[in-house]
Image 1 (spheres, rainbow, N blue to C red):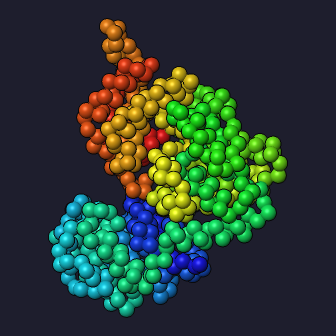
Image 2 (cartoon, rainbow, N blue to C red):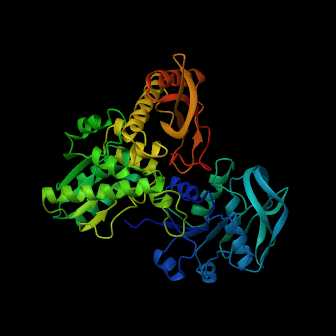
Image 3 (tube, rainbow, N blue to C red):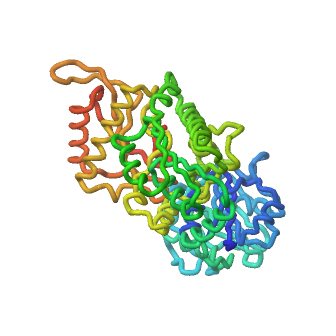
Length: 508
């Protein structure tokens, strides 16, 4: 099945991945590509619509990022958001200038003219602004569709050319009717059908995998997390030649290695590799988080190569890479936020015919939907996300056996108390971090100088954005008391109240 596609061209704004997520929410497939994607490639991609994202630049600067002018005359509907809206106006003869005062946060949007873009949107509603430049005059043939007190051209369009611009951010939840505006563009302007469902994804992907993997031996890295479990179930449905390799790198949470064996041992052909000492030796003296991730990623591949040789010919290596991994590791023109072991650290020559990443185009919540569609138990599908490098990226600075035990014990206490309080399903992710700080404390009438443990708990839907969880004080108190009493080398507990953005979910 050929799904209709929306092309999202990335100009470097902070909410760009969220735009893609919102389009997927409306059951329309989309992909995030660099803004300088050549026009011939855009034609080949054949989108039913194009979205220009926001970005940090000013369109009137000499080296500001821009698309080829021909993109605006392909006959494909285009929606510009924030910088994207300014770019369309600037390229077609309008004027964009630096405003005397920027506009940030919630503003009242006033609809000036009813069009297909504003159908179902009330005359006044709340929108979310974040800009210092503004459109002063529009190109010929365009008209203002909405404004705010500080932005005369908050939304504009040309129905004949199907080109539209929105100065605010419809993709964030603070814009009351933002989803409705995106829906109007996708269905009313682009004519999208909304054919992107996880049921159709499973059908299509299994058919593709059956054809691609036919006759070949398949090796899959099974961590026990949601992504690798769903990838295993998907590939297992397509071939009987699957061997799942569970590499215990010694960086898992307390009891997790045993749990993985218990859950998956009876489901698939499972090979367990105990490699904890090997990984710790490689990480000795390493403090830089990017180096940690690269080392762990490279070592994973080496282990897989060794296992592959021991079990005979292997044609395909399957990885549970998902879309946020690709984006955060620097897809196209996007900035590298952090490397993920599934998409970084690979050697130039991999001893496999091909690497298969069946979930590469899916966001986390879509992966969970696929797991449910495949019939995986709820305990697996809704398992808490855990990074591939494990506790190595939850220990700031060097990973030593002593600090690893501190991290594992503190994390286990946090998880136990969250389960006891009944907070496990409503909170997306929670864990303990061993910080790279030590503080003075008093334990048993003696002065101590030990590790600071940070607790992190966040609320999210897709891991692209997240808010910190308001855990009851009595729960935090119990966790703190237990950690400082029961965990060796820990004498202080702090709670992280930073959202994403500006922070990432993990500390490293």
